[in-house]
Image 1 (tube, rainbow, N blue to C red):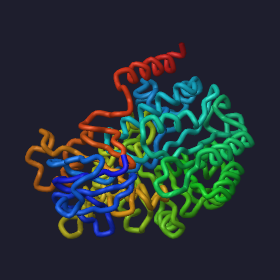
Image 2 (cartoon, rainbow, N blue to C red; image 1 turned 180 degrees about the horizontal axis):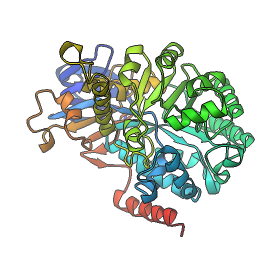
Image 3 (cartoon, rainbow, N blue to C red; image 1 turned 90 degrees about the horizontal axis):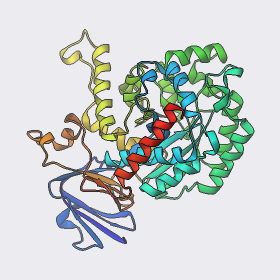
Length: 462
């Protein structure tokens, strides 16, 4: 559709530079780009598509900065339910080794549909193993089907057990093959233009699954092509011990030694970091994907979110893998991040009270991390807020529901303080992905049946 008019929103949360919240607000967009935004009375009256959002609250589309789509196939596997990260991985690696290209496609559709139904419009996924002929192309095809913006990370593992790494040799690749495929994907798919629906990221999996040489080569290749870099870092104390034993460095210092610092780099988790390492992130422009639910699920720890914000570190949210979170609900993740940061602040300031009590992460701060914060982490200037010249990516929630009864004193904060909901509308680039609570780009009943069949086959080994 050439033009789109959104009007009459009870509150339109812009997340622009002034953090405006417009009563009875709306915007007018052309070819997926916002031209005018403000009170409905000041907008054009006609468009090719008009969406009246009376009684709704409208937010910028949320940006998911870390995920593993394929893990929707292995949610709540009994043997991995009560394990920390390293044991969790060792349990699931052999199951993931059975995946096919069709499994990658189906699982990506599932994750992307869940994300859309929770208000996410842009997702970064980290796919780092490619068994049985599967490729990153398989999840790219799924993203085109669902309609979300995708930052597709060409992940990799090259350090198998025989070389001192954590993953079994059956799920690692040679470094030459990894770099060759990285070039192919960048040259085939990467689009750096404003409004881009697809970008490629280079993402060796973690310090305990790739060699230092692959980290260096990936950094050189990414900077040659102008793409971003991503990896897991400082997630657990086990990882810290591994890096000190294997490389003689703490995880962050190891990244610095292989050229992995700068504004084109972001790390998933970064739970176990020192003040000096936080300052290094801020000084060099490294971003962080905070994955609160996964960190709780695997007992990894509480990331220093308030310290990151105070230092000026670029911070976004990630739902992380659907086998370490068991869901892909971005609004729920923003709520979890707010609550976990408050718990962390309470633990640190347990003996303090009154004016000495530590600050608490607010609902609006958590929403900002989930929107413009995530956009900044991914290096995007065109998403993350609703303002003229930016993409028409938004989600809307109907406030007239039982879950918000009595909570409309502050509907913006209520979206997080109250139980997380499925969204009523999710629009990407001016295209409706979720309409009145229903996804428009996928036959859900048929898809769920196919997905469950694949999951049973994969876990049973049949």
